[in-house]
Length: 359
Image (cartoon, rainbow, N blue to C red; front, side):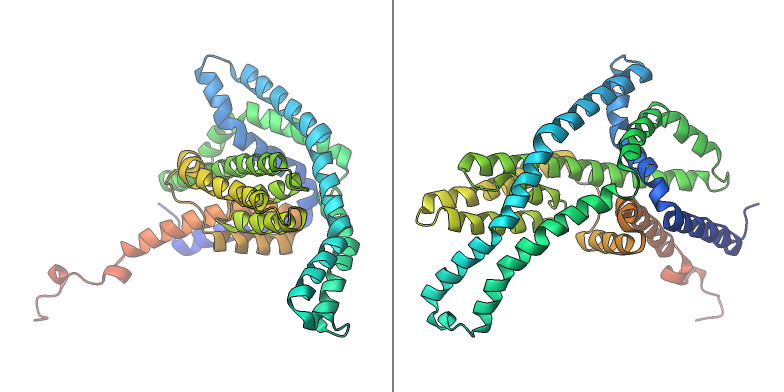
């Protein structure tokens, strides 16, 4: 006999509280294990595909791990230093860019020539502020991410955790299945399957889309000859999981830089804008339909809310678990809505079930 609903709610509430408390107090310790688990989850479909092709799980995991290490080393040696260098250069050149913007606006709006003009003073201070704060901000971002725990331990533990979790992923899922409450196991499996489908379609698919778009924007802008094209493309690709936001922010930043660099060359400015137009066409007609599909994803507002809340409460670790938690809550909310719509509270009393005396 199943437990009463009140008892079930109590135990599930305790489990949720334990999870949040562990995230609050042990977030720094859990970080490498969360990252390793996320990597293993993302690579599990690839390991399954290699198994279907005839490789053993050990061979599939080893091959994937070696390729991942090679890609990481390549990025650490070639790509990341270029991004950091261009970002630093962009911050350093900010005062000059804003000074040129001030001069351009002064020609069009003579009132800005007044030294006491509020807008003139604002434009003069924005560039200096970005130069002063920008480098410190970028440095704080990297230090907050890597300073949570010792960087050496993080770099060593994450690959080990990812390797062993990827190797034993199917066994872990099977063992967790044996611990499910027997009365509710079918419904829990159904909800877990929908959560996995949502994460697979949104997280895996969107990460792939963001990576491809980031490379496309960066390479396209660099081929056009735009200064800081790599860092602009990286930024645009990084936030492309929010529809249109990545293209708008990256496009405005790229076109703004192009106006200063290619002033008087409308063809070059148009080429920079064309890179983002082509990226949006590629995303909307090829990447998203093929990689994300038509399955239910996460609403951008809900995603940003989850990132803000978990980031504020639990820091960097909270931002890592925000997306899977948001996806899980979304699936549970849809399940609860289905249950509500099939209940008497929603349907009311059928005419056929009305008492005979009520006429």
